[in-house]
Length: 401
Ligand code: HEM
Image (cartoon, rainbow, N blue to C red; front, side, top):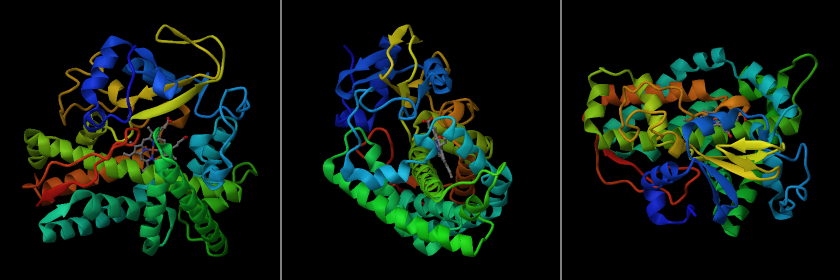
């Protein structure tokens, strides 16, 4: 029987040969170590994302006992509180209501207005990288860049950026399939501190509205419906976490790929290929988010010919789906001009990434900025990936200007 060992170093360094082999062997298989069905092919992943008979959450319809799941560990109460009203923990009708209210504040117009601010952050950080000559793409550019953008959007003081980053890094480790007790403890403590911070921020915005996202969330109203404090806390935190890590890791994984494929980098430098087009290939070829889960909520569900029972869990392998030759021609080839924006990198269906327009803008500005300002960019040492799978990203990316 096929299975994936999420602790195998060789797999974590380069999962694609294994994912390719598993996908060609079977569209779906039971992974004993994690008690999940694994989905490997693009069509099935794409359809499953949109299938309303499955959900990210089940507690709106079933008890933990009915799903054979343990009661939440009381030791991680703050972590549970922080994600309770996150869009990623909800299903309709709560999800529909809260997503609609957030969408009223987080509009394409609000994103567009951030355009020149984003350009400014990118330019300043590029200056620093150029001055340094040798720099770490993640610590010197991607992290400060993405956190500055998200702080500007939310209306959080930039002086608190490091604090938010440390909390966010600690919290998201709870989502790994192999998180230790110590990691979970750190995630919970970070969540508690972060909740206290966000409550204060909300109180401040109530007194002094500034037109930015947290302030708008406080004020947003739709047919007499408003967001509660707990809902705003979860929303602020999910926007920061979801908005930060994935953007940073797309830049890290993406620039690693560009440095390894010099011919593709040159196509950006010469402007033969537009940065916005290349971004779609960065998201497809080595995605920063590799696995998303869904619970089976209804009976008679069949996926890829396999009957699935209520209470079972399906894990969708994005990295595998995005290298599926049934959907992408020569999928292992990194081609910045591929122009396939219908990958699943931002998900699909009701949980489709609400930040996709912002992420695309941030990524395109960065790719264009580096190609224009630092065309001689080169790799100083072969970067290492973090030994995690769900969130795939580099530890450092040492480059020379
Ligand atoms: C390259 C960067 C990004 C990637 C690859 C990415 C990817 C994703 C994916 C795959 C999902 C769907 C999860 C699922 O279906 O289970 C998602 C949802 C989400 N993303 Fe993003 N994201 C990125 C950037 C952002 C940004 C910049 C923000 C906000 C500022 C953001 C906020 C969210 C939120 C709030 C959700 C939950 C939506 C819902 O459940 O209705 N993301 N993202």
